[in-house]
Structures are given as structure tokens and as C-alpha cells.
Image (cartoon, rainbow over the protein chains, first blue to last red):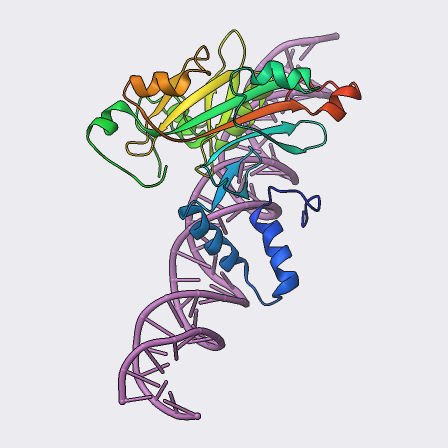
Length: 124
Length: 124
DNA sequence: CTCTAATTGATAATAATTATCATTTGCAAT
DNA sequence: ATTGCAAATGATAATTATTATCAATTAGAG
């Protein structure tokens, strides 16, 4: 598959490659991957896995990098969900017409052992 | 890499392959993938992506398939987090010695448009 | 037993990503 | 400007995880 719904936020490396090609036709895919990796290391973009066997990238929010997404099983839409909820999230979303089938929360950081050892990685 | 920390819960297909090989040396990796796919479709195992470019599998809880994980940036430990929290999750975990650097919640289901259309996929 | 259909294992194919390397580019010092 | 050199780039090979293919094996139903 060469292209995604146009205008969709969460693009794959390939999506970005074809988009950049419009402006700079001589760009190589390696540069796209290299640049994305760099931007991710600088916390400018965030690399998400939505269990498709590939990654999707988006710009980080200014305030921090906490992202929630709603993935429609039917049309494949990726809808952003604001941080605020979290607690009443599900009820709130269902009230708004969503049907939640599954969810998956991943927390990144240091476990008590490593935290105590005083390790301090800049990134997750 | 051929093998993971022994005793760790969340195994990759490769991990499982080498484990099963001990009992049945003639097993092929294709059967492992096929079986995992089947078990996942039956909601017996759950397929997680922890942004490593591969998947890890675990048995589903009896009550439903809602999983939270804490991934240590330092030692790579994958620690299970009980559902209950969710709201006070972060404060609670930090009180327990964790350092949370990032999190990522993914919700699966139907968006309002598709939900209204009456679609009803068995799986996410 | 025999026949047939499902399952299996070996392996090829695919897809996403990463590594390699020769070439090009940008730019500091002359 | 011109040279020299380090960094960035693009083409492409390599790698990795996963999926597809297909012939051979196995397991039951009759």
C-alpha cells in the first residue's frame, strides 16, 4: 500500500516518504527513517505502534508527550483523545458514541530497582 | 537474539518457538505463529506491541482483556499493572518507587460513525 | 485398513526497518 | 574562489519479524 487517507495525522515512514518526494523528488527513504529517528530522539515527534507491524509518527504536544488514541476497528480512523479524561474516559467516550472493545496502556520509565540505582535516561 | 530472560512472562514468537522445541524438537516456527494467531483470535492470548519491532504474547485474564504494562527503560523488565488504578495510577506507581517517563494508551473499538451503522466485529 | 481433509514443517516471499558505502554537499580555512 | 574534509545523502544490500505456499505427514470417519 502506497498511500494512506490524505490528511490523516498519523503517518507511516512510507507515507512521509511519498509526501516529501513531492517537494524533493530525489529524497531517499533512508533519510526519512534517519530524520524520524532523530526527531523522535529529540522528542519532537512521537513514534506509535498501533499493532499493524509498522510505526506511525506524529508531532509531540508542547506540554509533554502523553498520547491517547482511539482506533476504529471498522474504518481504521485514528482519533486523538485528550489527556484530561483518563479516569472517566471510557464512560465519557461511550456517551459520545464510541464503542470500546479493548484498550492497552503502556507506561514507560524506571522500575523501582533501577530508579533507586539513580539511573536517569533522557528518553524512555 | 535467540532467547530472552528466562521466566519472563511476555514472550516473543521466537521465545515460544525455542521453548516448545525443548518438548517437541520437530516443531516449525510457522506452527508457532499459526497457533498464536489462533489463540489471539479466540481471546486466549493477547498480542502486545512494546515498540520493539516485534510482538509479545501473554495469556488473557479471565475477566476480560485489559492489560497495562510498565516497561523499564533500564533493565527492560515488563511489569504488569492491575486494572483498578487507572486514575490514580501514576501517583500510586510513583509512591511505589516507579519513575514514569511516558505513557501511551490505545483504545480499540468503533468510532461513533461506525458504531451507529450497527457494525459489530467480534474482535477489535 | 483406506480415503480424504486438516495440520504440519520447510522454506520462499513479503514488508518494514536498519546498515553499509560510495558520492555529494556544505562550509571553514586558506 | 579554491581546497580539504567532515557530515549528510541516496542507492541498495542486509536484517528481522511475519506471512504465504506447498508438498508431506497425520488423524479420523467410514
